[in-house]
Length: 61
Image 1 (spheres, rainbow, N blue to C red):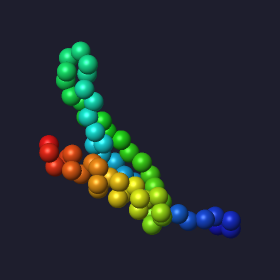
Image 2 (image 1 turned 90 degrees about the vertical axis):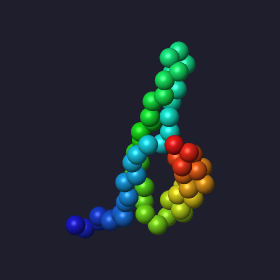
Image 3 (image 1 turned 135 degrees about the vertical axis):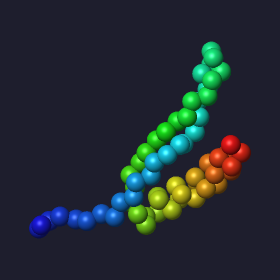
Image 4 (image 1 turned 180 degrees about the vertical axis):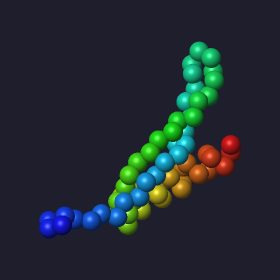
């Protein structure tokens, strides 16, 4: 259609961390999701951040 613009998007979803209840000391998973534009500067920086910070923690589990 006239005036429409296409975007290349990517869906990210999964476990992003854990939360501990201060009284019972139990752990609960934190689940999140996001939609991002593919092949942009933010996506590259965010992926690099996740790889450096989240993946080493996930390997300990």
